[in-house]
Image (cartoon, rainbow, N blue to C red; front, top):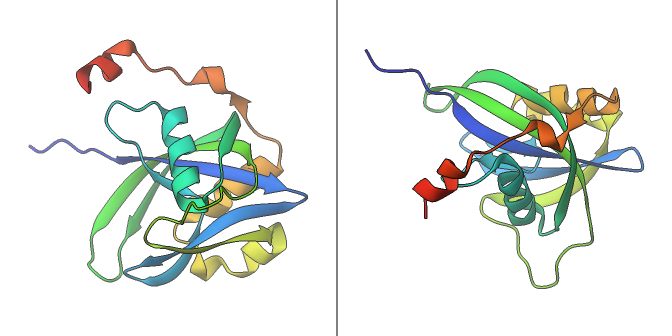
Length: 160
């Protein structure tokens, strides 16, 4: 029997003056909105992953401040019928201005700042229902210290 394995992802929750930094990305289902997010790479801690993903997708340095939540969600790709379960670690933090000369990774089209109302009004364009959940949790003040997340040194040693 094949063992079930969810895809582990990270998401950066970035808020400034009541607006959240999102990315608009090309997907098989068209242009979708998401947090700056992506997969955990081998040998990488959750915090390292979210810092890397935020930089790649926003061209801005990300400084993590706290864990917003851990989310388990499932989606089925309309274009392929593929069924995927994601285990997502949402980490809040801050960003600076765009890094000069840094470009957005493929398939990111652009970044944009949206209010909660704007985000809720475009729910059909969300890449995942976890987008709204994590932002609502952030807006409600939920979260834990970053030291909640641990990575044993064996993970780094395995991937050197």
